[in-house]
Amino acid sequence: MESPFDSHIKQNVNFSISDMTQRILCFILITGGVLTISSFVRNAPITVNTKKAIGTVIIDPGHGGNDHGAKGRFSSEKDICLAVSLKLGALISKDFPELRVLYTRTTDTYPELHDRAKFANENKGDLYLCIHVNAARGKRIASVIGYKTVTYYTGKGASRKKRTKKVPQYRYTYLPSEAKGTETYIWGAHRSEDKELAIIENAPMMQEENFEKNYGSIDVNSPEFIAISLLKTKQYFKRSATLAGFIQDEFSKVGRVDRDVRQRAIGIWVLQATAMPSVLVETGFISNPEEEDYLNSETGQDELSACMVRGLRNYLTWLEQKQQLENTPPTTATLATTHSFFEAVEDKHKQTIK
Ligand SMILES: [Zn+2]
Image 1: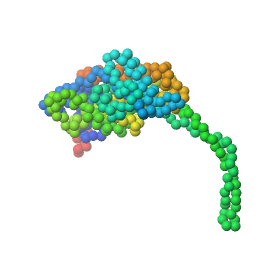
Image 2: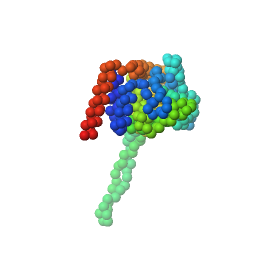
Image 3: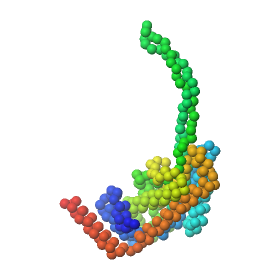
Image 4: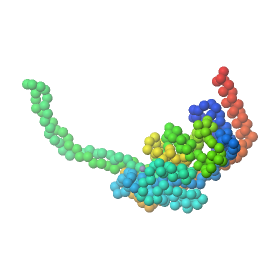
């Protein structure tokens, strides 16, 4: 296992922010899970400890109401999403009674996307699971059913000639798409700015009652605040990707075709508007008859939700281990490494100034 120091440095590599902010960020990262935010909160030096694992899971069954989503031979995406989501939630409550499970919908209704995100943010979700069903266009097969004679002319004036040719006539049949399997989406990395915005807007402290009175005012444009937001964005990205990976692993263990973890640039607004790690699971292809049967079957829905719960279990174990590591006071060795790291940064800084 890599040391927290290594992973912190790695997390930091891609940041293209000012040197000062970078150093503030390094400091925050190296001090681990305890974020001292006193530097940008006037009057009230407070310490926020990272939470133990997670408390609230938001389940979002895709589509609903007039929005049917993708359609198969006999079923609609919205109904499968709801059925799988309810099974998933019930299983989470059974296996993790300490977790609070909330749904964006439990009936055939269509909450608007911004309301779903708002619901998740207002309820301080720690995880957002979005359940969908995939569809792929079928193949068009052309078969020749006969020939038609067509008349045409060539040349001009005296050399103009009448000609005929045979043109094949086709009948088109559509074969259902063979695409099958599950894929899990996280928000596109280039969408991080939107995520930052959602995080800034939903900083848990700011939702507290009497926030101004208790903490004074926060300058959301201060480098320190932006540094924390960037940190959260990176953290959520890593967590979302990790959870998505664990879920996909479980799907492939039961023989589902593994279409991997993907980033989608458009169409997953909720993933970037929720200030928490979030994934969207495309449970299978309604456009594939075999898969449509599976998605509508009791066995299929049980299997899908069980896979997601096992993925969640692995994620929670991973998160707890990570948090334990972060909450462990730095050892002398870590402090020495940290110290030499800062010296190296300092040297580099001096060199660039020269
Ligand atoms: Zn969908």
